[in-house]
Length: 96
Image (cartoon, rainbow, N blue to C red; front, side, top):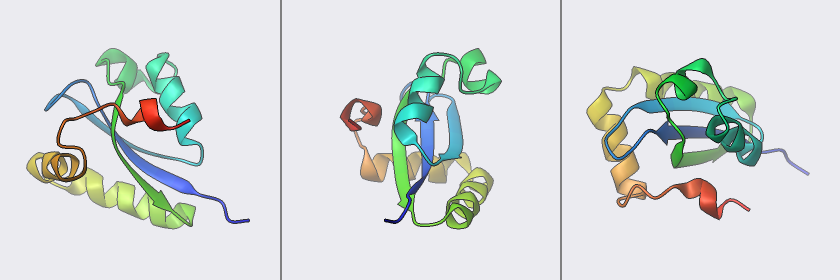
């Protein structure tokens, strides 16, 4: 059985503050962010909506993607979200 790792983007609202992270349990991690236990940044800026998620077979690939995304210009990040989630729906509602 292979283990999955996830790269994800959270947003405070459409075109709002963004947060990029990596986890091996996307359900738990999005719950932590929603409950204010995810990180100081997401708690401070109320970044709770899961707007983009990618699955990887290794943690190193997930971390590499996270690093690359963090270096992208903001407009590229917004375009990535718009391409896969044009309505900016909270994807965490469909995880379970």
